[in-house]
Image (cartoon, rainbow over all chains, first blue to last red; front, side, top):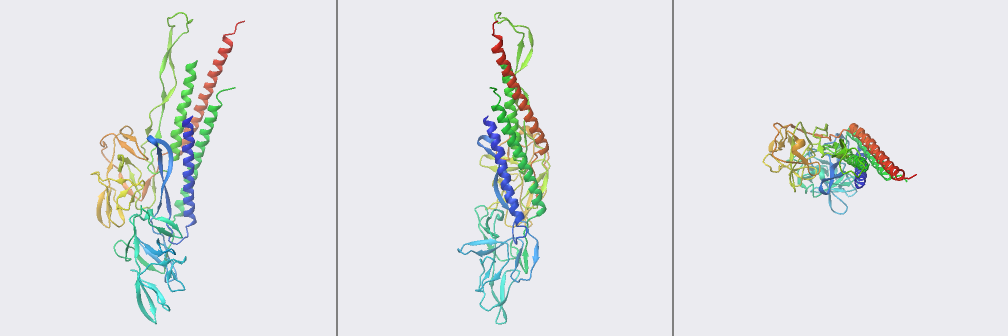
Amino acid sequence: MSSLYQILNIARQSMMARMQDLDNTSNNLANVNTTGYKSSRANFQELLSNANQMSGVELRSTQLMQGAGAVQTTLNNLDLSITGEGFFQVKLANGTLAYTRSGQFGLDAQSRIVTPDGNQLVWSGTVPAGAQNVLVSNNGEVSAEVNGVRTTLGTLQLARFSNPGALLVKGNSLYAPSDASGTATTGAPGTGNFGSLRANSLEQSNVNVALEMTHLITVQRSFQVSSKAFQQADTMMQEAIQMRKA
Amino acid sequence: MIKGLYAAASAMVAQINQQKLLTHNAANMNTPGFKQTLSSLSEWWTTPAYTATDGIDTTYGNWLGNLGLGVESLPEISDFSSGALESTGEIYDVAISGEGFFRVKTPDGERLTRDGRFNRDAKGNLVTVDGYQILNSAGQPIVLPDGTPSFAQDGTVTVNGVNAGKIALVSFKDPETELTRDGENMFLAAGAPTGESVGTIEQGYLEMSNVDSASLMTQMVTVARAYEAAQKMVQNQDELLGKSISTLGKIG
């Protein structure tokens, strides 16, 4: 009987894993049009308890897929995309740094370069009031027309991680470092292993709809198989209990 | 009569064990590199059967043959057939096309796996999805410098055109007997590798689980029916036992 309970538990573990996988896949599909979004993969691994006892499957980690999204051109000069590796550094309202691949920037009322959520882009200068036509070059140089003269205002640096797949997802296309990702190293765009910038363009989401949809099918089917196994273990239990006729 | 009761019960226990294996395989239908566990059943011990005696005579009756005492599960074996390769396009995903295993360093010693969901950890080591280091042929971890790695078919890793090490593959002539399951999605080798050739490494692919869902479902049906039949046999034996107790002793 105890091993029949074990079967119920293995099947339950598997069904729960499939639900988590479904959540993850749904989130990817929901963000198929989100600028700078990196699709996430749920990594499942065989689960063994004490002394190699079979216990089903478990969600071990989620991993951000690092494939580049397609680049879309736009009319905004401050729309930036990164060709290659690296993240923009932005400062959150609480002063901590976060990292993003979504380069939708604009100027706020105080002439600061900000994301649509109002988080400031981290760079070495400031845009003076009244400056016109702010541009960012391929290697991260920020310039603007001040009193009609194009002036260099500063530079922006990109951040890289040893294991970008393990960054923590903070929502709003923002990421934070984790123990597994390592700490950020910064550098000028286009140097070393840092990607270069491209203005008037945005990186689209890297979600592959065809892959996600086929994944959805396999998730559903394996859920069905496990629920069948659960039902069958239940029937077997019932039969064992009913064995003794009154 | 009692012998038959236990023989039928042993069949129920064996089928429960089969069902457990099948459920575990089903749970890992989508686990990359997973090798399904198989088990078969075999006849358990037999006992000689003799013609009945009156119970007073101490000599045995005539030998009739051997009577089976039930069924048992044979030791589990792993099915090492290859799973399908699935394209993921991820740079750290690698699959072995053909024979071979990756060498993995775990806290309990060296293990082998076919699960190619690799990553570069915070210190630059090439690691498995569980964070264990992948080893080269000298048994040393592979440390990757910054940059995008490229895995050649022979396992050589190059980063920005510079050689960064080589992933070791080991193979076995008869993995079913030479390897035992030890650890999650990993195997322990009994001795040195005995295989003559190894397969190639394919970057951007994962080897999926080799669980065959169609045969799994049919096996599950077989288990259900065999279990049901054994359960009915226990009931029959019980009925016969009941009858013999209540009617055989009756006088008049």
